[in-house]
Image (tube, rainbow, N blue to C red; front, side, top):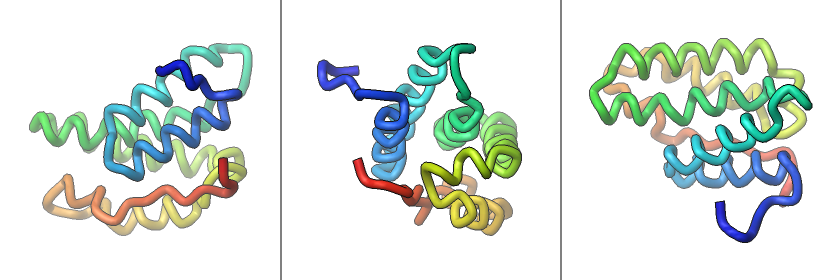
Amino acid sequence: MSNNKPINEIDEFYLGVEAFNQKDYPKAHNIWEHSWMRIGNSGDRAYLKPFIMLAVSPQNYDLNKVSGGNYLFEKSLERMIQNKDAINKYINVNSLIQHLQNVASQEILLDRFNNLYIKRRREI
């Protein structure tokens, strides 16, 4: 992280969203993982796990780790559905879930991430 440290974990979450939407999956993963570790058991961090998994999935596909990429993609979707009420405060989770369900059967696995955009609920 740079000297421009986010004010709170929600701002940090949106920095991850921005990186993800720019297809910088490693950066998004690092931002969300950092937030996950920093929050620890002191707060509700369940909303972060699906995004951490989703950001790592294309990295696995890039490395030809197909089973790992598939597992992370599927678990991300599952956890997003489980935590959708909490997540919906920050992003349009129903739209994201629908998109993930629609592209889950893509034969070219990295194509799952084409046109994938996380829509914010508020501006930073």
